[in-house]
Image 1 (cartoon, rainbow, N blue to C red):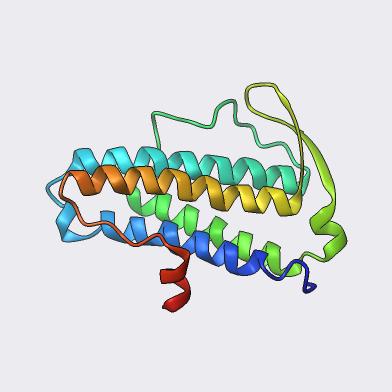
Image 2: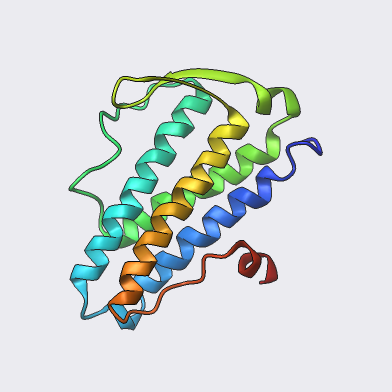
Length: 161
């Protein structure tokens, strides 16, 4: 890893921290009698995980097999959490091993809707962080409106812990 790509590692760690925070909240006693809220949050956590898998495949130059970024069926919370945490850890390791040339390499791919895309590995990793933050922010806002506790999402909070 070079100094120009060193910011990617803490960004991937930030993504993992955000994801983990919501999984932990959903497994807390506060959500025990709110399966509707858990299912709503899991829908979006599953969406985030699908997009993470798709972009992992793009970075590796492998087919992903997804025809959509959404699914009405998904693994139970413990299994989805385990899979997401493993992929988040993979993203951290991937960012650590990138050199500047690999990080800047443009990769052509096809979105699940058939549109063509082209992004660098750096852009893909940055997209995964911003994509997760967007959906986690909307989800935690809705859960908070329902009076449920939610995890912090701010980068400054993550860095302070």
